[in-house]
Length: 430
Image 1: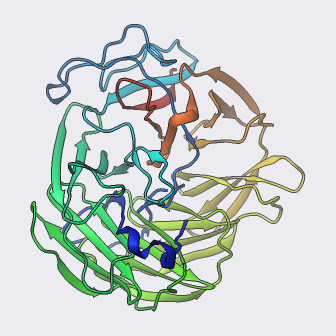
Image 2: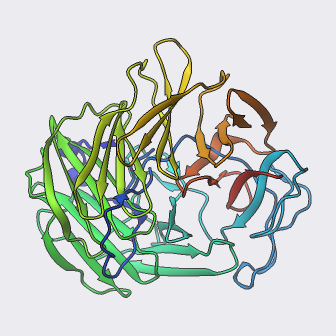
Image 3: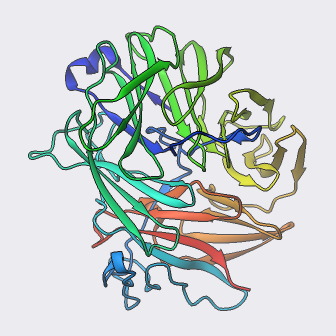
């Protein structure tokens, strides 16, 4: 969630938030939709932040060149090449592979107007990774600008194929220039646009380098508070559905398609407290959590789940992961202990005992036989009520968790002091 001080920022220009969205006619589905995010910068919140220097990269990534597996620099670890497998000992957990992101910047100016540098976001969509956008104007303005060349990078799952692309984001229509989102599709040369401002929100679509967007029907037909409002947006893992939530005091939500058009009915007068917002992408739709209440939307735009996860909560933000049948959520209760709550797509709930954690969890993945928890610079494997810790050869100070399919735990390592940027997958060896 981002709180926007509109009146104070009107003269500072517009800004672009990013996530990934697929194009084409979305398949009919009753599955819930989703898309990731912590900072709700154009997408879902990302679980936890942190990062590390990584081992150097080398070779020709476009042709499958490998990152050098030698000694790591700046606190990073020696590792396998792009798409390779780290040499974990049987029965241990850690980094199982690294994917180089050649050309992706290690930082850009924050989209929340703080002036603080942060990396261009990495999203998991359509079984691949999408990075961007970042600007290349000369000189580059403080924020991503309309009609400025915005760069994107598409990376295959194994890192062997890369597709770099530049596109000038078209100027928004009159009255829609405060909250604007540019969602890279899972294919190059295609961008879904969501324009927001005092007239509400409208969706559009742009294709090619400098084409004008086609503005489709209104998305959230509400008058946005001119002082500030809360905004959360994100996209499903297949890139075929997006979710936008906005308001101040009273909130509304809408599901949208890749062409920016609304799907299903507008969900008005939502009861939200605004605490600990987190967008959660699912396979074909979207969900989001606020406090300990989870809302899930189907690909048809219906709200299919709206319920509290737990009865005991001390106000600490939850950690969420996708499970095969729904969601897994770590909740810190009033008893000062962590509890694992599972919520099915059908609304069923269960609670599991959970071992004590010395540090707050930054990331979570739930596999069939065990769970993985990222806490500081440690990876914890949990089986039942027992846990085992494995030190990671990275620092999580500059890492972002990339929301992914069940059982997967990816980190975007974007240390501004490192030589290159990369994605690492965490897992265990049998």
